[in-house]
Image (cartoon, rainbow, N blue to C red; front, top):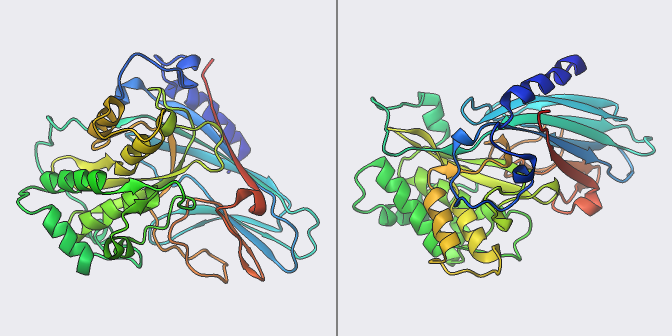
Amino acid sequence: MNRRNFLKTTTLAATLAMPALTAKAAAGATPAAPFAPSPEAGWRTFELTSHIEPQLTDGVLRAWVPLPSVDAAEWFRPMGNLWQGNASVMRVETDPVYGASMLYAEWAPDTAKPQLEVVSRFATRDRAIDFSRPAASPVELSAAEFDLYTRATELLPTDGIVRDTALEITRGASTDEDKARAIYEWVVDNTFRNPKTRGCGVGDIRTMLETRDLSGKCADLNTLYVGLARAVGLPSRDVYGVRVADSRFGYKSLGKSGDVSKAQHCRAEVFLSRFGWVPVDPADVRKVVLEEPPGKLALDDAKVVAARKQLFGAWETNWLAYNYGHDLKLPGSTGPVVPFLMYPQGENAAGRFDSLDPAAFRYTLTSRELIAA
């Protein structure tokens, strides 16, 4: 991106900045208000810096850094990317199916100290669906979008035990909203967050159901929601991203600022005919149960009840949305597809690096909020 145009986003940041939010509140001070995300709180602007410094290896070295690709006028607006480094190739690549963008970098074999830095800016605000105010007429997806977001993938099957489970959960539900809510409540009631799961999990939902081990993290639990929804014909999708700020509602478990190298978080959306795309996040309800101080809260704890009520239909968007992609082929890669692109990826002639170990792969993600003067 042209640097002059990128710097112009500072002006846009000022126009989008949250007028009612002080710098102290943005930093995560605990307010008196309950957990209640609302777009009326206003826009916030952030900058995420991805610094990649993989170790020198024999042969060609490659890296793929996810870029903000979701462009949703109501709640998320990418504002451009800048990059610098000593790679011989640096270019933006876009997945042709899901539109997931990434910066591809390639270093020649004799590069002494491979390094790459990517700075991404974006504006975001909370989402909250008012279920008392449906659209006057049904909202429709295009045929192509409906097909894309109801189809099965390798880790998102919609037949067999997945469909049988989804049909049982939604037995007696007559509308798409009733079905979507029933699946949400079932996932919250029957899963749990496993702190030993590496990264965000992988989302192998058939194995989860067959083994009856309904544990994991966000890419397991929210993908289970997506798979069950698709199995009964509800368009649904994962949204892959990373937390970039503390929760302004005082939830320690639902935010992260500064060094966010391990703050990746996958959310979900379901499409309802009276409301369009609706945000959901049963995995974060289970994160509150496990991690919110003092820890291991009961489902009837006030903080859990508040989060559970809001996270069908609302998100606190202290979070960057990368993309919706599943089973992505990394351009220029000699390795296998990745189930999703939420972490920087890298490889050399010996194979793919462990993206869940930023210390070994040597990358850091750092966030900061851009506060208007």
